[in-house]
Each structure stands twice: as structure tokens, then as C-alpha cells.
Image (cartoon, rainbow, N blue to C red; front, side, top):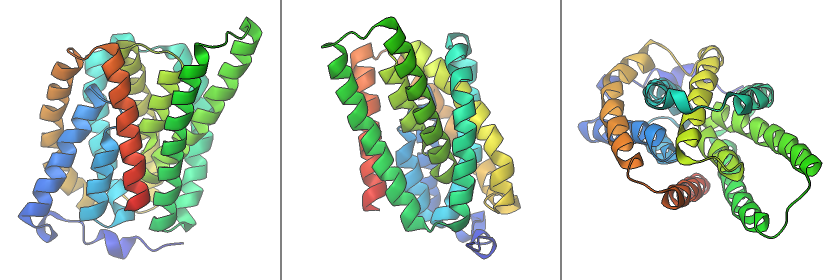
Length: 264
């Protein structure tokens, strides 16, 4: 198992330069923006945090900030969630989180980045392919139900795994919600509740792995202030984005995040 404790001790406000803090603050604002506007864009935040802080330890700093963004997103879009979809996803997500926890105990940073980046690019490609095929064929009702169950389980496991090992579950779930035909508001509302619940469930695992401690929470307290304006800006922009542009931005953010993880 990788030893995290010694590396986590360096994650304090006093060991970060002003330029590094500015980069983290911008990334925190992007977390808020992604939660209320373009889900999946926070993969850019993931890359910034991993560049400034120890890669594995950065996930522990980022998780509480994601939860701040989740709360703001739920307050904004709470009435638009589709709960049947959420209940269908949660069992598979739990399995993915457990698998991700085991993976984190043994995998190095390089293995984590490569696996997540490859998954994100694969999900983007599959989503685009499925959306094009949807206009060419119409399966019967039984076929749609069976395909829907398989898709929910596969995306659920991948979403749980990626969110546990790299806080990168947003793009995976974005691809699932887009492929399921969710409109903008129901997309954002369902995603908001999903990640608030899932990210809260990850906290005990992250603490147990040594990814969250007093030092990281102090840094989070300083950075959380920047999540709020980012979320507010995202809400303003989301109100002005049409459905087609919204979908294109989500897919583009997923591809950019996947490429960043593979090249980093």
C-alpha cells in the first residue's frame, strides 16, 4: 500500500506559494461553475490540483470542495432531479466506489491517470456513437428496457470507480445522462443530487486512506470561498445556453479532461 501520510503533511497553506494558491482558487471556482453549468468541466480542476499538490493527496483536498459545489447545485436545481434514475444507479455506483477504494490502496498515480483518462475518452466516443445510431434504429420496448438496465449498471460501476479514485466521475455520469436523453434542467438536477450523495459516501473511505486530514480541511476552508462565485456564474450561463450547445460543451469537457489525464 502506498504511504500517503508523509506526503499529506505538505498540504498546508504555509507550504503553498501565492501563485499556486491562485491556481487552486481558479480551479475551485471552476468546480462551482461545473456543478451549475457544464458538468464534467471539473476535470480541468482535477488536473490543476494534481499539478500543484501531490497527485494522490490532491483528491482528498478536492473532495470537500466538490461537496460545497454539490450543495450549491442542489439548492439551485433540487426540483428537477429524476429520482427513479438515481435509485437505479446507486447499487452499481456503490460497487464501483468499493472497487475504486481497493484500487487506490495499491495503484500508483500513473495507473490512476491512465485508466481514468481512457475511460473518459471511451465514454465520450460511445455516447456520440449511440446518439447517431438512435436516429437510425428503434428497438422494441423490451429491448429498450433491457438495454437501459445494462447501461445503468455499466455506467454506475464506472462512475463509482472513477469518482473514488480521481474525483472524475462527473464526465462518466454526464455521458450516461446525455445518452439517456435528459434535458438540461433534469440533467443538472439529477446530477446535483447524485454527486452530493455519492461524494458524501466517499468521505469515510478518503479519511481511512489518509487523503483527508486537518491540514487538507484548513486548505479547503480557504478555497471554498471561491466555489461560490463560480457556481453563481455557472447558473447565469446555464440559463442562457440552449440544449444543443449544452450537450456539445459537456462532451467537449469530457474529451478535454480525458486527454489531460492521459498526457499528464
